[in-house]
Length: 264
Ligand SMILES: [Zn+2]
Image 1 (cartoon, rainbow, N blue to C red):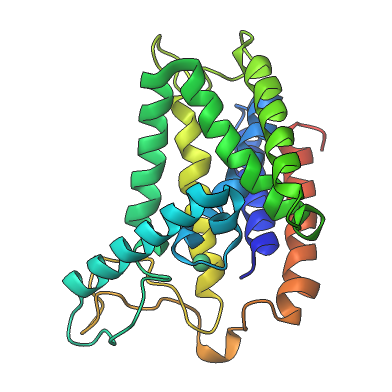
Image 2: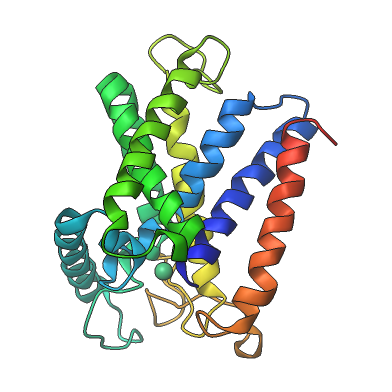
């Protein structure tokens, strides 16, 4: 799928989790609903860091271009190193390592560890990175153009600063789910894991499938391209994605949000 569909599905997924939490009788504080949805929308773009043309690889200037090259080479090396006889030869790392459940868990756990160990500045850095991605993903065309990068960064920096200030207030969510002292912001990894998984599911619906299960082998393949039957798949960027899936994600997100906040 393309950037905006990934971001919308990420936000909708977190709002769905919020609705489930409210239905189970322990609703999230509203800043957790909002922040989690934005982080998840941003994290749902992150797996495409292995692809030069992807939104994320252009979102942070030279830094993300350099990171993209590194992730692409790393993914390709891991692919070659763990390939079974049934896996095809390929020439780059796109849609391999970063499109697996292992990557999702490692990145999420890493973010949680960073947030707990690094304190306020680490939390701000995690928020900033994901706000930039969420803005790029959700506003998409509006955030395009050579001069808009700085505006997106400014908007992300100010919103991160404000969100961190709101979350820091007692009962607002810095200690949501993990309530012991020293566990503040441990939950930040959860929307990051969810976003990456939702990205993989979105890609699995497209023609080429997605090797989510790696390194668990399926038959003669370790990079088995998971997905529905071929006739149910669509091309990335096709009308189904823009005209059907994106409106559906918006409606589900809206309903989920209202349910998460106990408004319905
Ligand atoms: Zn992808």
